[in-house]
Image 1 (cartoon, rainbow, N blue to C red):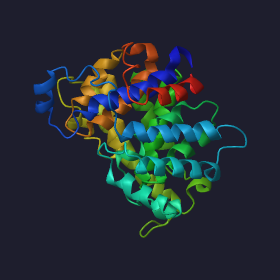
Image 2 (tube, helix red, strand yellow):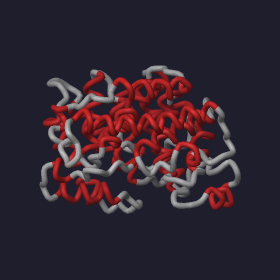
Image 3 (cartoon, one colour):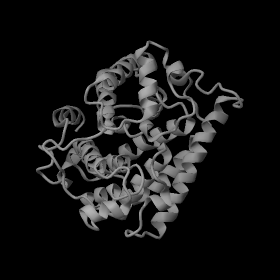
Length: 334
């Protein structure tokens, strides 16, 4: 990747996470009263602390570093690495950043040794599924099906809803497409078309019987629910960017981001409101009434994948928490 796009995406994720951490659970009026109409525009603290969004991204990236060598990527190779990484996160004393209950509960069951299919929360589609999936879009050398299946599988360990799986795949692909040079303005249409093409695709080798639950007749029906919900979120995104309003809270048009498909849509919304100005995009994402840290972390990942590391203020890299871990992953993929 040119322009150190992996660095841009991973550090951008952490920068957005840190900016949004200070504004999550607050109204837009409260955020503006403290930071001004432009929102938060600089990191605070040394280091600037992130949340579980960045913390859980790291074990996903470490798992990919260890398995993206022959033989082929598979659930059997990936699952124990993700399990150990997630359990280690859940037990860490640094896991004190208001983590989501879905992740905590599922990781507790993983720690107890339950099979992942029994540990996951079957009908949860929270943004914890895709806030951590960015490494799946950055790791080089993966076939399209491998990238998609891995993105869905890392979500499935904690979030078993089909929308969580579909949104995670879309998030990873958005990162990949931007890093490969897709203009950000083309992203909504590409995401919507992918929803159409993948509507009945189910990765049996990775997901096993995850689809099998009351009221669901077959795997295609299970996945169609997820892709249709993502398509609806992308449709709202298309409407929003057709008539952009930078002064309006993006959550009012594309969702508050507490669920996976809205976190994706609202992050892309913030990116497109401020194309070419990543700090403005992060500030807008952090100045939202919804899940500000998750929206901003994905916005930062998308902006960094599109523009590269040099798009960020030069002094931020030395001030962000987990900078060594982020740099290690980025160095492997830049």
